[in-house]
Every structure is written in C-alpha cells, then in structure tokens.
Amino acid sequence: MRRSRFIALVAALSMLVIVPAVPGAAAEPADSLAALCLELYGDTFGVPNSEPLGACQWDMALINAGDESYAHATGAGVKVGIIDSGVDLDHPDIAPNLDLDLSCSFIFDDDPVADHAEMANGDCSNKAAIDDLNGHGTHVASTVAAPVNGIGIAGIAPEATIVALKACSIGGFCFAPSVAAALRYAGDVRLDVVNLSLFADPYLFYCKNEAEQRAILSEIADAARYARQRGVTIVASAGNEAADLQHPGIDDVSPDWPPGAAEVREVGNECVVAPAELPGVTTVSATGPIGYPDYDLWIADYSSVGMSRVDVTAPGGDYFRATGTVQDAILGAVPADGDIYAGFDPLNAVFPGITSSDGGGAYVYLNGTSMSSPHAAGVAALIVERHPTWSPGAVEAALQRTAQDLPCPADWEPLNAGDERERCYGDSDGKTSFFGHGLVDALAAATS
Image (cartoon, rainbow, N blue to C red; front, side, top):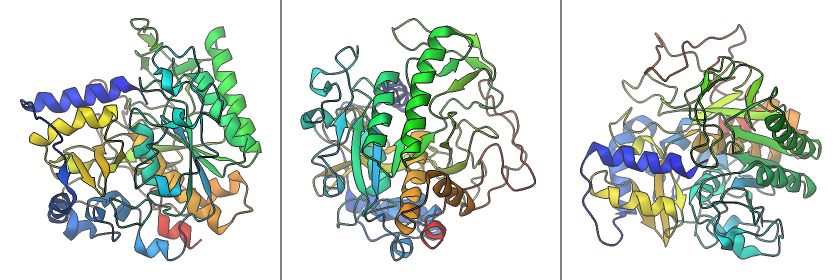
C-alpha cells in the first residue's frame, strides 16, 4: 500500500469527467446504493448476506461467502492480524470484532511520512496510535471480519477477531522495519492468520545482489519465518503492477523514498517483491466480477501474476470493466475522517455510490490486490476455525485444495505497453500463472 497509488486513482477517476466541488458529505445512502447494486448484479450474483449493503457484495457471492457458509464456519475464536494502516477504532463494522488489547502500532519515530499520533515504536499501551488515519487498513479488515450486525456489509469470517498491527502510516508507506516488527509480534502473540496488503517500502523489488537491499530483505524474511514457525498463516497481495513475478522486467518505482530517488532498472529473478515472494507466504492475485455477462477479462487489469508465485486468486475489483460502473470494485469500510474517504467522497457527483454510509459507518469502493488478499485471509480463518490444530502449511494446502478451478482467460493479450503479463500459462494439475490453484471458496473451505 502506498498513498500515491490512491492519489493516482482519485486523479484518474476525476479526469474522466469534471468533478464539481461538493460541499459537505456526498455519500450515497445505503438503501439507494443497495437498490443500484441489486439492479446491476442481482440477476447474476443474488444477495449473499442480509446486511443493508449485502447486494453490493458481488465479491462475496463469487467466492460463496455468506449465509450458507456462515452456517458452517464464521471464524469464531480465530485471531486475524491486519498488518496495515491500523483500523478505525469506532467503526461499527470493525469495533465489535476488534481486540484492542492485542492491537499495536509499529510506526517508529523516524518514519518520514507518519503523523506524530501514529508513532508508538511498538509500545502496545499506546492504543490511540492504532487509529487509521488513511483508511486502507479499515477497508481490508472489514473484508475479513465485518460482523453481521444489521449495519453496512458482512465479512467472510464475521465472528473472527481482528488484531490491528499498524505498519503503514497516513502517508501510505509501509517501511520494512515496521513490517518486520509487526510480523515478529504476530508470532510472539501467536496469531492464527495475518494479512499483508502491501509491499515493504522503500523497494518494490529487493535484489539479492545489492548489499543494502539484501539486508532489508533478510530482515523481513526472518520475521516472516519466525511468525510462521509460531503458527501464523501469512497471506499477502501479489501487487498492482501488472507484472509477471516469475519473469520480472522493469522496476521504475524503487526506491520510492526519498522523493525523486527512484531509478528505472531491469530486474531478474535475483530480485523479489516482499512479502509476496517470500517462502511460506500465500500470495493472492486479483479478479473482477467473473460470471458477469460479457466480462471476459477475469484477471483484474492491474494484477500482478506469476507461476510458482501466485498461490490463489480472489476478487480485487476492476473499475468499469463489467458493468461500466465503480461498483465493479470492492466495497469496504473506511473511517469517515480518513484520507481515502476525503478523496473519494466528492466523486459521488459523477460516480454515484463510490462512497456510502450506514449506521454511522462510512464505506468506499476500492480496487487492488490489496482487496483480494483479505478475501483469502478470511477463508483461511474459516479453515483455522474448523481445524484449530493444523499447521500453517496444512491451512495453506486446504486453501488451495478448496479453491475453484479457474483456467486462463481465452485469447489473452497484454492490455497495454506496460502490461508485462505476456501470456497465461499453466500445468497439468490446473494451476495457472494468473490464478494459482484457483478462486478461493468460503463454503468449500467451511465444509472441508
């Protein structure tokens, strides 16, 4: 996660039309947004759950997460760490499932883009520092475990416990020391699952033949190994660079701090994205609303891929690609006073329902493998509930085994000059470079 990506996304959406200044909140009321979603998706996906905005959760219907899966598993008793920008401590679709005592901020005093209020240096007694000033972490957490409480949306594991581990600041950067500290803490307190919808700044690709990058990579890898050895199943996003991680090409964003330091460089397999390419990490690519009439892209237009890199896929959203609306993205909770909501809310004037509100909570449609990864983490939580003694390796194997087979898109061609996904390829056991072992399936996992 980087703030610049969301700034760019807001700017790109704004450029499609002239967005007028809109005084005050412009959020679409939940009932009118639900009616819009029912018109768009009702015939294809139905309504997966009873929440007011359930009709908008095509993503949950696609992976069979909802009333039927809840009858078998809800994530009860499972602790899921959200290594991200914190969570909105007061959001009605977060607070009921949040373990504030275990939550902690790992933003350090030397973080150059953090707000002072976020800087706790791993002092877990500073609970105010956990509050999400950006919005990304809240969105991710709600996909995993928004409760069924008559407000907003429902998560995949609506009775799982959320543990907020802040490693990303209001500036949207997730620097490697914070990520590593959060992973080690997850191991210390023996969380069941952690989700990382991020890459560890300041490098996208860490090249092992460069001493500084090799040292940073080793710090993150050691922390991930420690967490996994202590029973933590680690789930991470594949990235939004439309790259083939098995055949990487150009990295033009590293280092992304300080400003202006990035260099255009060719990278090969000696260079890896962290945490997505670390051993023992379940890596997730992103799809759009597969099954919608005439939507044949399947792999989201931004999603990175890679044989032996991507393990499974999950809905990440694909603005405008299926219905021509922003509702083709993923609806999730955000703080109403966070950066993301402030940027997106005025866009309602031309993209109805890009933000909404219900029961005192705010919601936004976002795209990204950041949105796909928590779908897989939520399904992993269901597996842990059903099989609490299983090792991370066994949980990962079940996540893959219960996934829906998903073949390569027919007649695939790169979407533009920057698309490094030259082809989708696979092997005899059904695994493909785009989708790994397939689309995660909550109901199959809950009954496995």
